[in-house]
Length: 86
Image 1: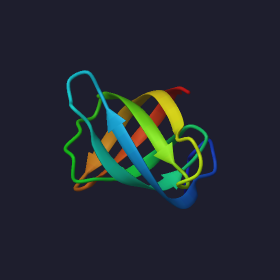
Image 2: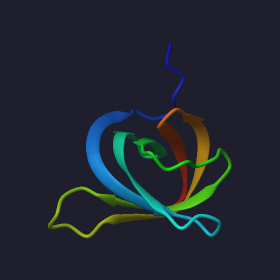
Image 3: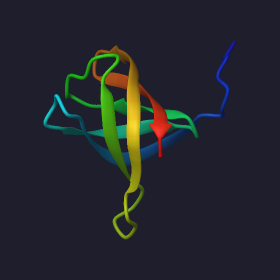
Image 4: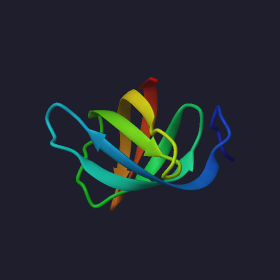
């Protein structure tokens, strides 16, 4: 049983992310909801890290900016984010 508050959509968007303690990285957003997302990336991020995230939906649109997202979990080359400030 899925206990999520919001519907999660399967997507394929590019993203870039950065934080104060990490130079930054890129990844693929594979699940997206109004409150968070799941990213596949080779960059090692740790749960609890605060990230700024840019979501690229297509090459002709300005990226969507998430000013603050918190890493809630990490497994292998995937991690989950909760959006805090958009």
